[in-house]
Structure formats: structure tokens, C-alpha cells
Amino acid sequence: MRVIGIIAEYNPFHKGHAYMLKEVRRKFPDAAILAVMSGSFTQRGEAAILDKWQRAQMAVQGGCNLVLELPFAFAVRSAQDFARGAILLLERLGIVNEIAFGMEGDAPEKLQKAARLIDTEDVQEKLHVAVREGKSYAAALTSALSESLGIEESLLKQPNTILAMEYFRTLHLTKSRMTVFPIKRHGTGYHDTSVQESIASASAIRRELRKTTPDWTALARVLPETSLPCLKQHMLLANNDLLYRPFLTRLCTMNPRQLQEIQGINEGLENRLLASIQRTHSLEEIIQETASKRYPKSRIQRIVPHLLIGSTKEQCAEADRLGPQYARVLSFDDKGRELLSRIKAKGTLPLITKASHFLTGKEMHLQPEVLTPLQRMLRLDFLASDLQELCRPQISRFGKDFLISPVYVPF
Image 1: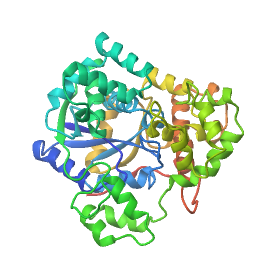
Image 2 (image 1 turned 90 degrees about the horizontal axis):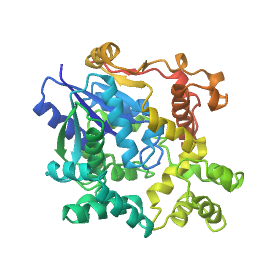
Image 3 (image 1 turned 90 degrees about the vertical axis):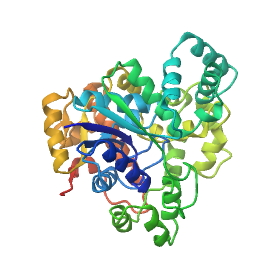
Image 4 (image 1 turned 45 degrees about the vertical axis):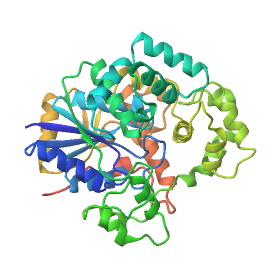
């Protein structure tokens, strides 16, 4: 059985995602589709609007066969770290033949060439010079690659393009046996705000869903029939703004030295964060006040969940060094069940279907240093789930990771 891997967020699963699965099926009609999905928080540091089991279920109902969680230690990081964690997870499953991902353009060979140039001495030197001049890492990288390749920077700045390039980069560096199937993205732009087209951006859909009275007729045009009922049923959507007071409390009770230990905080960012609380009245204002040319808004936004769950540089460095330590099952169908059997036979990672077999409630409250690397990584996922619960207008329950089993979706 050919297995196609997809790296996604499905926040929520919409017709653009369904289009991608359709394209995979068109080329590989008998293949199984396995998705690695960010969990409680997205790569940009925002709480996912629904919990990870609900989003995974929508994905399986929409055409995936198995959805696994990308651990928080990789999911809420830069494009480079996100891509590395996801690719290594797919590789260690031992059954994935191909990786499919969306691209803004239709020239994957240019991105592949760019990806192989990133780690060359010439590009790294240009990159470091640009960073020293005050550019953000992403801006410095696109500038260096644009100069080396002789192409416009704008072609390298699209979110999907940056991620696609990082996928190519990791596949090259790890000498992966997996091949790629790039798919030209279809529909409106990533930041488009309209839900009037047949395929709308996820951000436009989230914006509409958060309205007091969403336009369900418009949403029905951009969401698969399988996604709409789930969203109507779970209308207490997570909202990052509700993290303002917890975030403010953490900042007020930590000193600069403690802040410097948190993932993403360095080079004086702790001082900018502490100064911002004197002049701001919302989480968005703190992010805007702290962001700069060198520290883009997306980087500051990612710091929020890391700070609130106490995710440290040391823990993320360990994750980078060791790679994913497990494959956490979120949802599957009958073909997905077959994939799980194959992963057990060929993969190098333990499959987690019952989390308490790997981390107990008592162990959650121990000092991280007494836990195993797997437990430390898993603990961050559990804490992220509880933090996402704080983002809901009405808290339902904490400890979901101990209570919720993978969602089986029958044919």
C-alpha cells in the first residue's frame, strides 16, 4: 500500500484542504493518506479554534485515513523547526512513501534548489550579515537566497512557500528516502478575509466563525459537508485574546533571568516584553508593542504559549537533538487502522493511543528533569491542551489528554 504523508494544521478543515486530498487521490487513487497535524496551538502560536481530536476527526471525515499529532515542541516553532519535526516524524513511521504539500507557484525545482543553498557557506554568510543589520531571520534568509538565486524576494515570502522550502531542506539534509508531490495551492490567499469564494482561507473562515451570528450560508460554500456540522456543534471556539490576563500574570511574576530561559526569548526580548506591560491593555497590543523589524509579530506570538506552559530553550533543544519521541494517534478510519498495524511493525516510534500509559497525572507534576525525554515532550502537549481550554469562553474540562481516546471514523 502506497502511503502519502501530509503536514497540516486543519484549523479548520476546509475545501482547500479537501482539494489537496482530491489531487492526491487523482494521482494515487489507491493510496492511504496519513496526516501529521499540529495539536492545541498552531505554528503561529495561536490557540486552535477546536481541540485536536475534533479537528482530526474532521480531517478523517474529509478524506484522510489517519491523523497523528505533531508534538508542541515542534509545532509552535519557526518554519524550519516545524518542518524538521514533521518530516522526521513521518520518516520514523517507516511506511510513508511520498510527502504532499501545497505551494504558491508551480516551479518546485526552484524551491528545491533554494533549499539546498540555505546551508552553503555563501548563503549562511549573507544570512548572518543581514541578521546583524537588524533583519529578522526570515527576511534575512529570503534576502540571501534571492541574491544567490537571482529571483525576486516576493516569490520566497509566501507562508506556504517558506514551509515548502523547509520541507525540501530537511529531506535533503536527512537524506530521506521519501519523495515529494508538490500541489499548487488553489483558492484565495493566506491572508484573504473573504468567505465569498468557493475556497476561502482558513483565517477568513475563522474570522467569520467568531462573529456573533456567522453567515452559515457563506460558510457552507467554503466548508465540506463533513466539517460544517462539527463547527455548528462546537461553537465555543478558542480565542487567543483570553490569554491576556494569564500572560500578564506570568510576566509580572517572572524576572528577566527566568524569562531568558523560555523558548524564543533572547537578545533582550525579555526587557521589551516587561516594558510593554506598562503601555498596553490587551494581548494583541503586547505583541504589537514588542514586535520590531528584527522580531516579527509571529515570533512574539509564539512566545505566548511557550511562556504560559513554561516551555524552555533547553527542552526545545532536546527535542531538536532527539527528534519526535512518539506518534500520538488522534483519529483514524478502517484504512488508518491498517496503517497503525504497519507502523507498529516497521516504525521506530512508540504509538500512543492511551496517553496515561506513557505519562500519569502524578508524573505531570514532577520536575521535568526526572522524566524521560518522551515524557518531557508529551508533558508539553498535555499542558498545551489545558492552555487551549483557557482560551474558551466557557471552560469544559482540563486533563483532556488523559480522558479522550483517538476518534474512530467508520466508512
